[in-house]
Image (cartoon, rainbow, N blue to C red):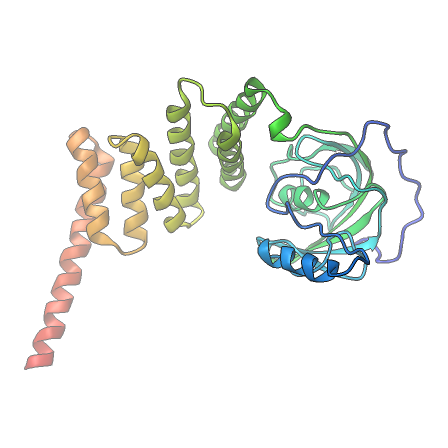
Amino acid sequence: MMASTEPVTEKMPGKKPDQGSAVGQGSSRGASVGSGGEKGSRAEAEGEDLKENLPPGDPARRDVPWACPDGTFVKLVLETGTGLDKPKEGSLCQVFLEAEPGSPLSYPTHRWAEVELGGGDAEWDGVVDRCLETMLAGEQAEARLAAGGTVAIRLASFTEAKDSWEMSAAEKWDLVLSNKERGGELYRAGDVAAAARRYARALRLLVVAAPPPDYDQIKAELHANLAACQLRLHQPANAACNCTKTLALQPANTKALFRRGLAHDAMNDLEGAAQDLKGVLQVEPGNRAARRELERVMERIRARDAKLARAMQKMFA
């Protein structure tokens, strides 16, 4: 059974004295806007909402549904919370989650539990994370997914977590490497979507990390790994873009060349695919996978050209 839209009466765990922080980072960041009575405040709030590409309104307001900027869900506040601070990545949140049995959630459901924001890898864990980033202590909300399904969320309390600017260079770099390692584990286990989220998170953290000596190497690997995930998720345009970013750092990276070739092939850019696959063979003449794919692409080019020639003959016959 799904959570009722009526306010619940079950007692929440008490709020911890160290809870709270500024608005969390992530795709829902920047959603909260003040609505005070000062002159011009509403116009300013609406202007800020438009700048952030969000619908006007505060995601913590009970009377205004809030759409996540990436379009994955709409949040409806069932009971408003208190205070100003909200959880962010790394916060330990005391939550009660409700969802239909079999929903893709790794976070515990139908009981009070402590979850680390950003620590889950299941498909709906990211929805819960982004929703929590907009919630106040004591708030109850419902996330209605665009793809279907609903998650009811009650947030009792949360601990303070550091913003990226508060972290040391070592802390930031440790987060980059831990997310990269976790992404590799998930990819090898066959959870490609979760692996992609980990690689993307590592790349976001890399932007604010002080570059160590192997910064370019790690960044190139992350873009190439994310591209591998995107190919399997049928996102060839994104995969090609990430391969290009790898090749900007490592022009002879054969994995990136090969994956970009596959992406171009999936987008019917056959000449682009052939060029990348030939590039792989220039560096690794014995690469059987690249040779096999190149032969297949060349056959597609020949078939396309023959079809076009027949069409032209009929046109001028």
